[in-house]
Picture (tube, rainbow, N blue to C red):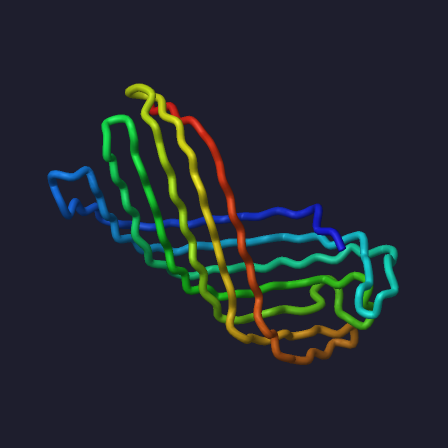
Length: 189
């Protein structure tokens, strides 16, 4: 199946207080705390049945919309070993309330537009490292690497049927991982 269409929304806000543990080194440690919201919207098309192996099928146009939200704690490290180089690293641990709604368009026995809802408690780890080179007082180049790894405990899979009834079964778990590497430039006003 394909999920070529969709969108992602990530919002996170946090507060921290910078601390310099060794004044003669350019090291800053900032304990952080905050709240985040992450949403994915997937459209599932190009159906292909694998179990049992019957192959492609037509008219698949389903949706799955997971949301992860909750508080987090973390730490930000900033180290400038030389006047032109800056290293930053951030680590966050998240507690997550997981909810996902879905529409299975080919299941006429399921309610439309909401066919089922997943709910579970989860957690996530978010990390980011960046190396910056200061070209001038206003310009800098950056190389960034980021990772997110989220999972849930067992939860509830509530299916909504077209006759108005609902049934609960066990949701084993939900997982989400993402990785990125980027190169950028910054101009400071």
